[in-house]
Length: 504
Image (cartoon, rainbow, N blue to C red):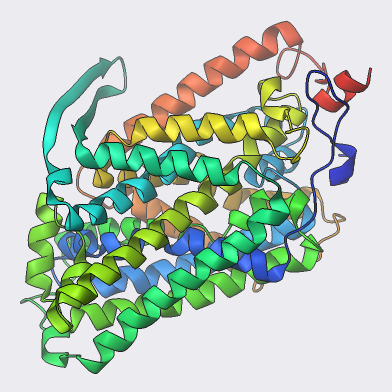
């Protein structure tokens, strides 16, 4: 397999302008900031009642602890691949090279982009929905449902697909948030770097205030008031642990965001691994301390009531109101909304570079390779993901989170973790500025953890049906594109990158 070209060898084109390179303007500080605001987002502030409900008590902390361990293991996978193959696209680039850029890797990388067309907007939508949920603390009327419907569709071999959509005041707030993020991202990357640091400042101030407040008003008796048989290793315990770990996995995700910006990162061989591991370590410490602090003030039984109804999930607002009163609750709610917006901002930035990289390679629609003639960013990809994210704002937070995690684990994370081992065998000569510690243990541990999360949950087959549907439709779509182009498996035809088409 020939070595990959440099980032500057692949340049997008517009209809009427020559190819233009992206700007390497993201250093270690900005990369770590983007990862952290992506990781933290609204997740830990709104999913705590969901994770406590999953395990039925404060033993839910096991979910966050195990989630941190698996995040480190998977983070080492991303660190090695990101340092060895820096460039926009992240997993698209890695999967293509691991399995052969003109053979099986062509199909697998296409399937990654196809599932990302669903999972990336879902991820953005969770931040927007979470922000709207906290806004309902200020304006309770936002929680009023104007319309809702359970959607069912029987699919041969797969069974019945189920989804519930609804329209409320919060739905329109979530859509507006995505629109605002698009507006702020419609500019040069060097302008975005300082924005990411500003947003991270708000995130860290919010978490710091929560931690200090919780520790100074901490009740150990309340925090460790475990229900009877909380740690009995029964089938129900493992089902609850699987659900709790799924939510914790969602809360930790984002540590890989810098990998999608490889063409815009300074010294990527060093910056990408350092930003990955540093962001995981810092966020894991913040999560554990913050959640213990909240459990020492707000009874877990009260959280379970919110988790079961999927309403009133603004646990931080309730937490601050108990300690200081309404003024503090209002301020904390505003800060959490700031944090949620920072997540939407970071997610849209990172994911918009993935379809762009695939289009450059000729493995996606060429329009996605277009770069803004003035500000030099992939504007078509950014706008497309933003519009789809707005559509997912019509679903509940819990449903979007579960579908997102299952789809992405099945069609991306498992294939990538195993792929790192495959790449070590197939390409031992590939330059690797960073090598996974204790290889191959982290990749194997991450894979086992992902499988456990997928299968060890009540109703786990529901989301697996969606993942299989995306897989099947993706394979069909790829074959329909590959046949007339004589690409693998129908021939040895090598697709012409968009940059070469433009140059000719």
